[in-house]
Length: 415
Image (cartoon, rainbow, N blue to C red; front, side):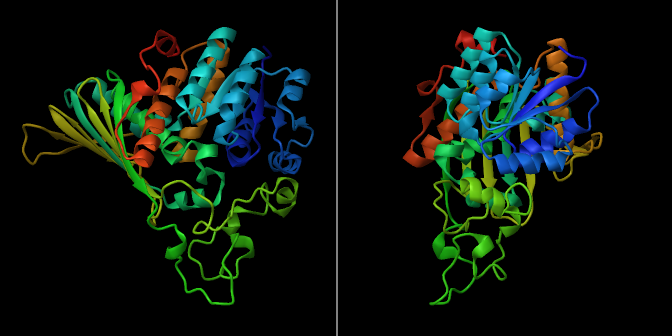
């Protein structure tokens, strides 16, 4: 291993370039040694953005591995590619950081775990919320017993930017695993993390498309003027409050890149061929008599994660919109509240969490210390998300054991 770690980035989109690429470009202990994407135009624009014009670029993963010596790779492709990319990297004895989710199915996660065991490499899942000082403090409070034994956790997430999921690849189950997997695994991981003594066993979910559907267009349609199909060419772009044409370009996803592979990020979110939800509620039951719920809504005009955690000795409330304060209400002090102060979040993407994820991955490569989020954590979150997708689509409660045995020794060892 060299003194400066050589990291390859697989996927030259926004996460690969604007997040991990830019962070690596600023570090002295690691750097971008190679870039891989199926779209050569996007890779060229990524190297220009990062000021790495001499960076080797590949449209073939196997070719990159054949020609480059890498200490690790960061996988930021669309979700359905995570499994194959991770397995090929590990077969070359290369350490991997897989931006969540680990894979889009429990079976896919199991395949990644098997590859990691076979090849004895470091593998970490990019659950960046674990790096937020707010969440770290909550974890400490729960572990310290200040609210007693946890009974119930509730999280409601509003995501203003989530509407654009319906305009991008995220909109289809076959590419994202559904939004309970693509988006929800962030939150299911936190629920699992906070309830460290429990294993999720049953899931019921309810979801639907209420706002982002053809009959809900937020403007009057003229008989001789068609809508869409993309915001950048839509005749109503100037009056549509959900116009997403700015997400198409200029830059990584401009018309030059579109000409190479046809991918657009600005499809009309009302008319697109989506099969995902714009709001929903999932209820998770654990084997230690804890219940948790996660709700997500992509049609609000603000973004926040709002939590209530109930223990047999007190209640915690906290939210990402007020990341420096946690409110504690002791059970036997009626009307009494106390505020617990949290250090301000550091600079960086996702409220300062992204640099923590990358730093922990690099440290894990150097020292072999435990990962921030292991493959065991990855499969547990995906299992809940996959069960939620089945539940709301088939209108039934799902036993996670029908998908995967989370207490299997090979999974437990992956932690």
